[in-house]
Length: 215
Image 1 (cartoon, rainbow, N blue to C red):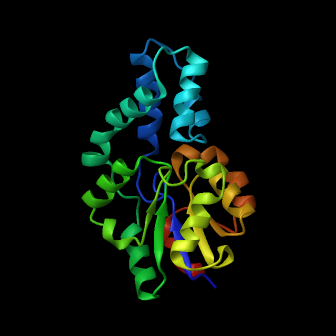
Image 2 (image 1 turned 180 degrees about the vertical axis):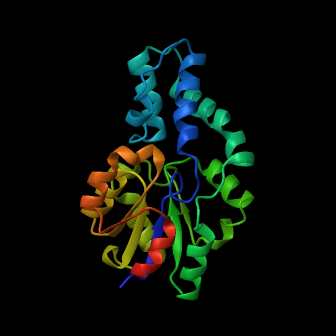
């Protein structure tokens, strides 16, 4: 029985993954890398924010600090979070269902806290979530279960009573190993991971509205 839910943010609650792909390339180009590898975003999306910055420095010979890269990328994407990024379909409907069933829910994200808060407030759903957990509190990122375990503790349930909803394979893998019930949801950017996600997730859905069927 599902007693609580932990949602990912980017690609699951908000339609933002293409933004990150474009920003990675834009940042590298403004720092002299004219033709960044096409798969660079696929590589860094599995890293923490700090580790992604170190990857850029080590692999492209950038002459700047980790802090500069972290701050500059946040600056580049801020306007998108504050003004443009929309909700994924059926988000409010799913939250309404959870509220009717008295199932608490929160967010665990690798995104900057300031950006996550700004987009959720703009979209009018920030106060609906019991918590917002980020890499500020869990710096090892989503390759380790810390952030999901923290979410379960906030909800007051054990992992096998909590549903983790994610659009990325490495996040699903982490949650599965930690004993959570998992839902993989489709996002265009992670479509190439779909076959494996369907195989290892407890459930896989094209859109969030299908979650009602397992509550």
